[in-house]
Length: 174
View (spheres, rainbow, N blue to C red):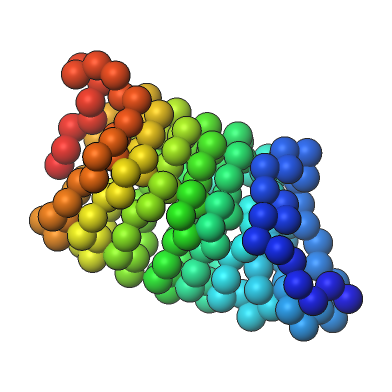
């Protein structure tokens, strides 16, 4: 049985629609949508880039979303986070070109390269625990219309909204 899956093992595999893990595995599991998790379902590891679901509801026991977990999926429009999610790895949604709206989980406290290349992203709500929006977090989010930024955010790094090129395309900050 597979005991270790490397960090970028399935990164941007656009023809991979689902991952199925044998129920006897002691390290990994998969849900009915073919999403790879740790065996206790606390860590979402990979949402396959070729998965055709337009929306996804995380398993309620999920506490952590790995780096680049949803990278390069071009069908997903909406993700529903489990209430227990505490951390979301950098680049989690890089290249999710159909993603339109995200309400981030209340327990996360940082945003790092989350939405690079999410060119159809329109609305984002940032949770109250976030204090900094790191550079490139919203790079090339050309259709971003509205972003809700709480008072807790004290720093927006250089190029956090990189490649939104004209003033009339800048999102409304709420």
